[in-house]
Length: 125
Image (cartoon, rainbow, N blue to C red; front, side, top):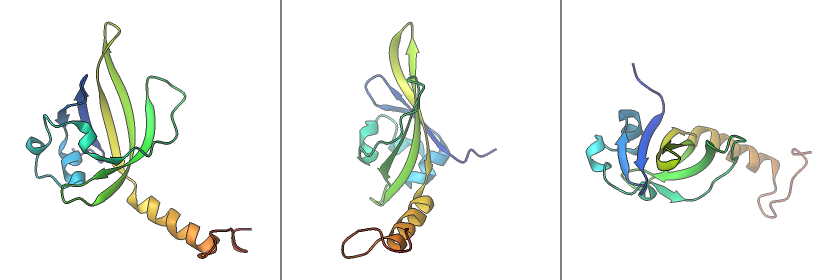
């Protein structure tokens, strides 16, 4: 069975302790050995978080990860904090590639906005 989403785990210091094979594939790594022990912050290009869920124990966000070759990969992540006895022990992050959706959004924006001013055009209304 193959999981279609990348999954990784970080410890309380933000260091990767696990990543599944799909996560490695999405990020362009042949296996987990290049990633385990590295700070998870090295994956992200920037902090472009959006849409926090109502449940404070889980957060859904969009960000951009960098592949092994430096190519930006837009992803949607769900972050689930891990706690033991009320003390945070790290988190599990599930992520998926949303680059196709982002491409469609970009084309839609270009069709509905003036390229010079960025203002909504007739098609938008």
